[in-house]
Image (tube, rainbow over the protein chains, first blue to last red):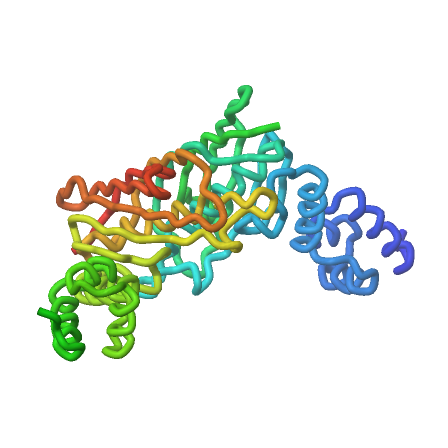
Length: 184
Length: 184
């Protein structure tokens, strides 16, 4: 039974509001239409593309949960966060992040992405870094997208250990262990 | 024997060109005049103040010696450098470097100061950070001036250990051990 456009668009809206992370490909499969049709439906319904939906959801999670800093203070773009458990951010390496002489990303930007994620993930008003031990596994170049994943490993009264692993594609580029102070 | 103004200004110029790091206080003492007189002499002779002279000397040292990055790429202001031995920079903590919520400097700025100093001090075309182990000793606040001192501790074929200690006044605020790759 072929649905009318109106029916399809109504179902599309419900589906996306239940699962904002569904891709256009999955929607096309589900409704047995082309990806182009899904894109046009989204345009007509003013539903943003997946990347934007992820950002919106993450921004909402962030606003509701993160106490230690504001979204603008995070280096990179948070795409998922559950405080005191894990957080994920992406950072696109642009001209201003690399050494002029070799187009390799400067170490402190990768550090800043990881460190601000380690701050954000902790559920406390005041979070400060006490110690960190970091490793640059391979150079990151202009144009690459770095995905950092922070995992909260240990929570004690005043100290929290956050492990951050940053990758480009499947390759690990940076690893850090952050020993964080928190005050409630 | 009291010198004429002309004699004093000539001697002042010679003294400063021999020792650009002499302070106005020391000059006043040396010439038995007031500090105000020294300042007026410098103005008339177009000799910049000590801070500016230090910057000029450091910029010259930098241009002549540092291969791995340009002066603008250093976070903070280099005030002394001898490649493969030591380097010193200062970093003034401003609004844009602190957390909005508590006016405490964000960790990655102290890291960036130390890390870029560790890169600059190494006498090689390409310098990358391999590992770092850092410690934040006490929070640094808006308006404070952080002086970072980098010391090259160990040089082997491809690896160099640089120790950086950053202080505000007499207090250590940050310590880092940077394990650097160099390629000749």
